[in-house]
Image 1: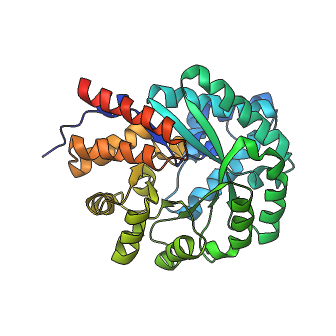
Image 2: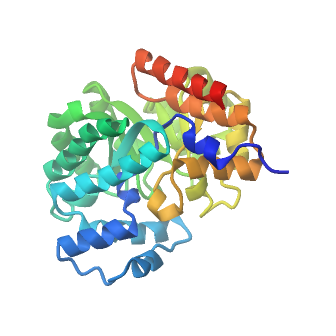
Length: 338
């Protein structure tokens, strides 16, 4: 039995993208172009050769490919081109609102100035309006870096806080629990920024990390976070408080054959506001509509379930109530017409 939801329906569906790493949108053709522009020898000279390097089977092997690829990002125009390439794809996927993750430490640690990174990204955020894509930025700390590095990064970011909507936490979770960065999260919240953190799937101490993030650090969203279904009390907690969970089926499929689809369905059933996103689409074989369709196809989702996932992406976005109402009305109109 297959879903009656089509690829065309998921592509046209108005949606919000809340779990998207801009560095993870570096497609092989752009990587090669930037390498040539910046005269960097990346060891590959064709798009096919670059594509062959995009191979991994767990988080650690993925990160071993992911971080070295960023060496081609050197100048403000590189970050602008990277973001604009993504925003064009977002427009094709009818992403109406996007909150883009970026990892400044991955760049400052190799000598690129914080201002270079954020200025290029912000310029693209402004220009994305011409594509009818409403965008903003979430600055993430790399959790396998030190607390001191996070403190310095937040200090660099605060002069630009009007360009940011929130902060996040990503990279290798092993031995790097959320509480390691509790002070930086408190300082960011005091500056008026929203809070989210990755709680990756099937990690050591997954549930303990989710509990720290929710009950102690007061995050407003969990990125991935589907291991929460192992604790019904925590599921009730997020459902009652409207705390969003951002699931990414195609990237999940690299470490979990079922894409955590059963968990997504459980969360939907419990009225927890889970939504679907693309994570690092250049590396995992699909943008947001592909993720919607892959989940719908494998788990025979109804149209109503797919629509609810899109609805959740707007209700858990960090936008004004007025903007949320406009997007939800647009979603309802699309559904009525299809």
